[in-house]
Figure 1: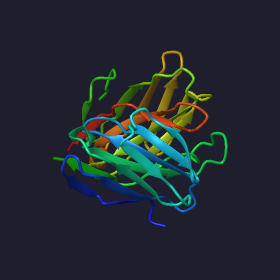
Figure 2 (figure 1 turned 90 degrees about the vertical axis):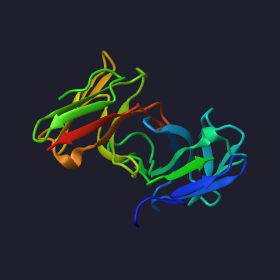
Figure 3 (figure 1 turned 45 degrees about the vertical axis):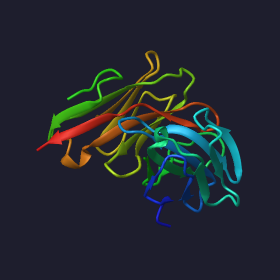
Figure 4 (figure 1 turned 135 degrees about the vertical axis):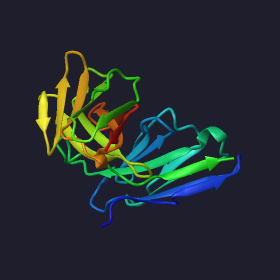
Length: 119
Length: 112
């Protein structure tokens, strides 16, 4: 297992187009997270899945954003009708959650991110 | 060298010196904290974590201190090396769902 993989690494699109990002988590991990990061800021939580269930969505996740994890393995994040304000790095992370907090066991492992530029 | 406050985004230190990066967190109910390091073009990478029932935890060259009274977290890096140059984020666990929220980060630059 080579860690969390994200594809594509870079995407340039025109305003109004749809884009989709894919994340392949670490295979043993049951949780998968999406974050958005803009320049000079920390990652902002968007949503997360436990197995195939989407358990929480941030208010940042407008109705133009949709995330899926159909088989509890890889996930996709789609942005419809992109706007210039969507330009950011989209980070995926995974973790194993076994209930409660065990030091080190709930740590998020991040992918390298997918950078979106909307022209 | 030491960073203070939430709004000082950069810290510059001399190679070999100790670094202290500070973070003020928002939720008094947060019970778990992690420091992450992010190098250019990469995702954040785990450095060290601490639970709220502890006030200090040590790793290899790094120490995290937690002061729950003032909701303050710090990361101390001993004998800072050029490879430590990166942006450092603190993250707090916001609840039982293990939803981690990140601060704005501090950019550490190590001068040779």
